[in-house]
Image (cartoon, rainbow, N blue to C red; front, side):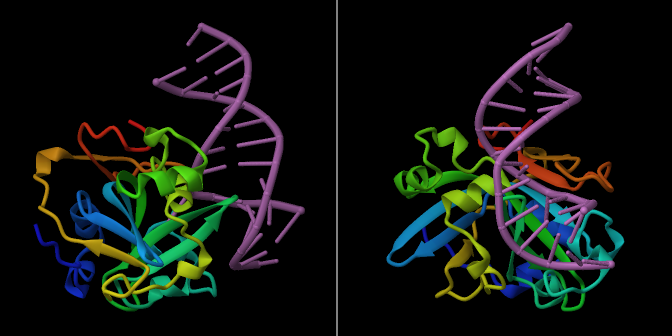
Length: 195
DNA sequence: TGATTGATGAGCT
DNA sequence: GCTCATCAATCAG
């Protein structure tokens, strides 16, 4: 089965739509000649200047400027001693993004296990900090265009999930606007960060 | 299942 | 200094 790289048009959609439609897609990390692949099973939407929990709520700064740029780019940031990765969405000037919270490891599992220093496949990518460790994602990968086929990070298309396979619930690990139902994950998937 | 705590880095004021 | 979109370990029920 031939899979296509998701195009700019996909990321220019409404952030909540992108967050839901990213579920089931293939997240690809190119490291030299090797490739690590995981299926996206959990995401969260961050709605920019109207969303208190978003990094862009306070307005543009040096740290979050990529959020204000073009859609379809990575936004990598450190939180405590881990990294998290977002994909920017919507038009330039709208600082919205989708946080990738969990993957289902597909390819390169041995490499991920050595990077994470564990043999437990269940524990490789079941959280935003964990998956960045498993895929060797750091600040060097900030502001990368994920629609260019020679990028270190790419996202490939896959069949769209039906509405009943997507669970909608509240976001995790934030202190503001925590009541909003902006977290999405694949029903019955065992690789999500928590139920 | 939930609450708590400590390690820890980057960015902001 | 302070905040924080984390994780792992621990303890209580």
